[in-house]
Length: 205
Image 1 (cartoon, rainbow, N blue to C red):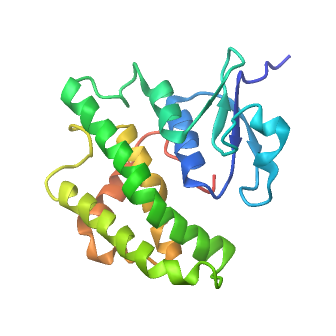
Image 2: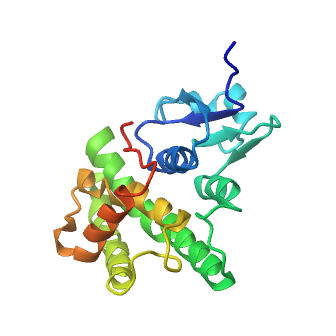
């Protein structure tokens, strides 16, 4: 008799925030049940889903004790603590948090949103006027990343960590929103380093 996974991930195949959780769970070799949601059809706003996450978003994960945890980077921290994916040195841990906050505040709102509007929803009269500003800020975020990667292989310390996973999730699909990564050799080399890590999966896996 096969036992069922204790972890249940409420997921979306197109979401980079959800993908980063799948990526870490894969690299840790953890088994989980995946339940797909459409981020645009209202299914995460039902009473049943809001009981799991009052903010009505994926990813949300049901833990082994039956409780639920949301916010992608918080989930990354929960599973990475005590592993090689969470830095050992205090300064490197602070750097990891620095880049994870950067990802959610200065990167995801621009690169991820442009990708979603362009590649998944399609341009609309409501979103079209906002695109130039979001594209400009997305390129600024990429330039900040490139500055770091000119002299460092990874974002937090000298090893691959959840800071890299957090930033990789939407950066590696930025071209779907029309962002040109050709001007960022440091980022492109870093993407290849991330993809060569054991247990790596694609966003489409």
